[in-house]
Amino acid sequence: MGLKEFETLKLEQVSNEVLLILLNRPEASNAFNTQMAKDLVDCFESLSLNPRGARAIVLSGAGEKAFCAGGDLKERKGMSDEDWGLQHLIFERMIRAVIDCPTPIITAVNGAAFAGGCELAAATDFIYASDKARFAQTETRIGIIPGAGGTQNLARAMGERRAKEIILSAKPFNAQQAKEWGLVNEVYPQDKVLNAAIETAQTIANNAPIAVKQAKQAIHKGMQMSISDGLSFEIEAYNRTVPTEDRREGVLAFNEKRQPVFKGK
Image (cartoon, rainbow, N blue to C red; front, top):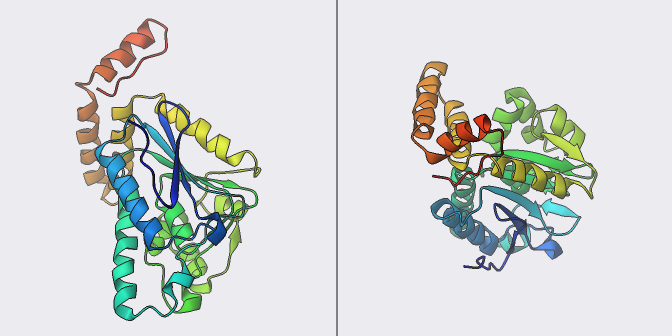
């Protein structure tokens, strides 16, 4: 079956195991309106139920100007409190769909990642950024706070004090600062960031998919537990990998001095 089509997203199968998802509203700096939020919910919830062979996902933005400028304030102009709240429920479900997706997600930030765009990137597993990228949590400038995980994910990535500085001041910061502060893993030239993310995604996809998903879950869930509970959770995740064909194939391939062929079983 072919890839599903979305009004505001562009999906591309860059290899048998790696899926590229582009936020595709370049004329609006890839800001997410209600339709894009619905598309992201549909896309990531569908991938959680059936990854269609995707073992790693790269998320980026169409064009070179922006990854995502956050919520579309033109659409929000004149919204009633009720309509604003109803729309934000979709945004909340969107961010949970991304966080809960069991397939690893790498974000390639190719430009501005402001407000909800910064939150969306922070909700993924890790970030590669263009040297032209800029980040900001600008919500306090318009009378709200980050409401798509920003106060939680930034604090976990950067620490409480840096997250407070960024969110309370609403000041932008560059890609190198984002790396130094723990939000971004690596910084690349503008024309290399997407390929770098795809290359790492392929490296992940070449590993045993059940093990990769269990490791992702153990890290993410364990960070929210005490060390004792985290160790217990880790062993539960580990034990799920032991009876798999992939575990047997991995050990056999090592002893036969060849590359393993993992089937996700």
